[in-house]
Amino acid sequence: MIIKSILILHRYLGVVLGVLMTVWCLSGFVMMYQGFPDASRAERMAGLQTLDPSSCCGRDFVLPDAAAINSIRIEMLAGAPVMRLQGGGPPRTINITTGEDVTGLAETQVRSVISAFAAGNEIDGDIKRLEQIRVDQWTAQTAQRQAPVWRAKFADPASSWVYVSGQTGEVFQHATLSERWLSWFGAVPHWLYPTILRENQPLWYQSVIWLALAGTFLTVTGLVVGISKLRGRSGRWFPYRRPMWMWHHAFGFFAGVLVLTWVFSGLLTMSPWGLFQSPPTIDRSVVVTPTSWGDVRPILQEIADDPGAEGVVQIRTSTLLGETSLIAEMRDGQSRRYSSDGLREDYSSEAISRLVANAPEPLRSGVVELLETEDAYYYGHKQPADLPVLRVQLADEQKSRIYIDPASGEVRRFVGATQKRYRWLESGFHSFDFPVLKERPIWDIAVLLLLAVTTIVCATGAWLSITRVRKDITSIWPKRRRS
Picture 1 (cartoon, one colour):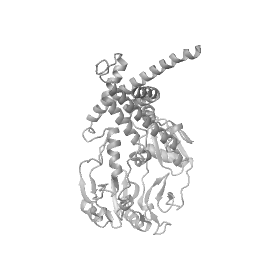
Picture 2: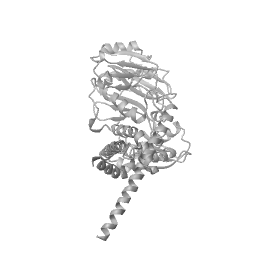
Picture 3: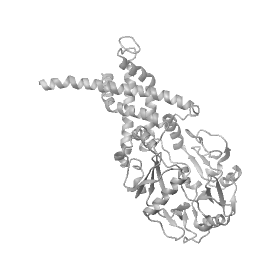
Picture 4: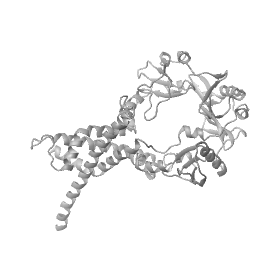
């Protein structure tokens, strides 16, 4: 009786959830090679105009030396140098030439920003339409905080769309026609990203959690039914004679755990109810320490006085364990690190060890080493990780790890207990980026085969549920009409 009740529940849940899970599997094939459109950091950097450090970095600025600073970025905005400041209040964008806050951009300024982005990223075409929008499919998760949003449609071969925040003047989204089309078959259905749902973040969040939880329950009931049907009264391992039933039962028995692994790890991507999360034993602010304008100002002067600082597109702060630096990003992709003593070399293991030795516990007991190869928590999946990297292994209860860029001193990755669980339970099982499998083309072959099997399980289950429920309804309906 219990198994029969579970079977009926599994059958009726499969009508909707079976179709949804089949869509998740099919869209997973696309997601292997095309994610949601995005303006990458490399694209944004390429789209910046060249900055003249001598004309902006040596200028006096109306900020008290004691002003608290979490981060600063200096770059060009529509032909004028600006400082993007965070710390001691809400974020600010300040025009360095006038000293006034940038509170919004005119259409001519937006057009200048977009044209610079297009030139830097080789978008070969003119702007055919520039308009202000509230939200669209490709900005549903970002439009509110970037408002007012400007969208430029280009008449280039890729049919590029570029989005700019009318408040800060930053390009935050770039989508080509191929990316948009592929996303309709990949990221949009996989992440449940239709605009009407995604722009309502709380509703979207809860929807994904409960649907993934229901999918997990559907898979568990399927496994229970499948195991219970093995070697039934007929004595056969797979008792079903009809092909579709046999296929679903056989594939579901062998691949059911794989389906469960994928749908449950998908649930974990949402971090529901704080599941598996632990408070860190060391706060990130102990490593990435705040600074002050009094510390930053003399370093800016060093950059302004350096004749080698040519081709700079961005200057930003990097604070590590109480040491303040400025990073000058060059047009050619190279970077230079400056301190109050001028141009500095890359951090060595010995230099980081000295900083760590003066830090509070548990950081003081950290062991520093230079990694030339990836490890279990610092690695690339579809793209190789940036190497070398300095790793600081702590002796705290979580065995935390901190990965530091030797060129800039910026923290690339901070790994505590939560990140470790996420790496194995979510990234590992959902993306299958385990150390042995993540090398390509091994990963491609393995995931394509496994995803094909799970698609068969979900698709046959959905078809069986729909046909059986339809049969149940048609068998009941005539009786109700006669009565």
